[in-house]
Length: 98
Image (tube, rainbow, N blue to C red; front, top):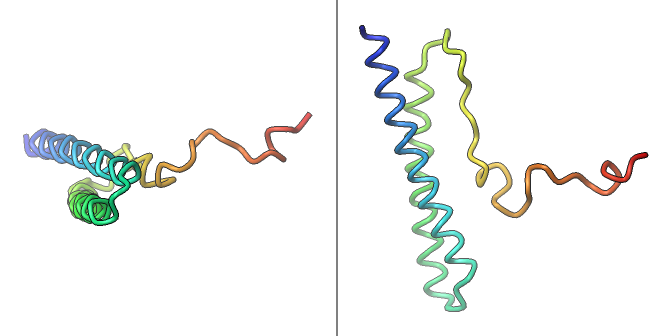
């Protein structure tokens, strides 16, 4: 019974984490499109705040998981490449192989 309760709470934490990652990405995108330096800085600070929230929540998720769990934590796509590159892009020397 306790295992089901842990799975449920971890599931809710993952959902919250996903929502906060989306908010962080939204603020970062807005900051990139804003011409006003003060507004850009405010948006980046807000995005950084959500990044800290996500990191703390991810720590809770990782500590809640038991060693027998099969699922591994998946890094957020925007954290992996900061949104600048697509994960499936390869350097020219790899994509031009024959």
